[in-house]
Image (tube, rainbow, N blue to C red; front, side, top):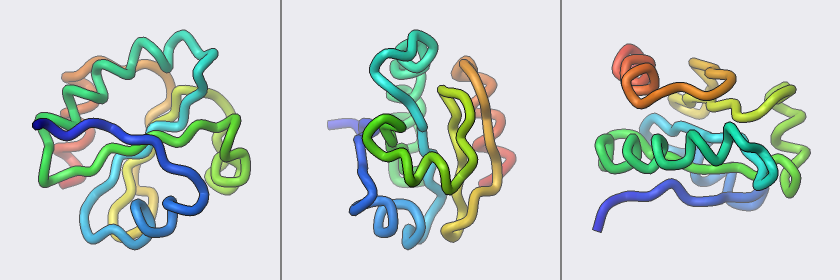
Length: 108
């Protein structure tokens, strides 16, 4: 079984992202967002490729407006790479797998 991005809410954000020992890629998305749906399979591949090295989670901005507001999410999809509980990289808009992998590799 390969790793898959999983949805988290406010309750899990602290544990899964801020308290995580390793890097976490957070996808801020919404079900009505076309580019968000386009990037979803790319994130599944990233989660599989980086299994054990990078956790990939999804935050629905409609359901978790507080988290989106805290990190200044103005448009979606926005992906943020967190290390040691701090955002170190922000990627706005659709990116292909090679672009995302390159950004992740630079941060590892």
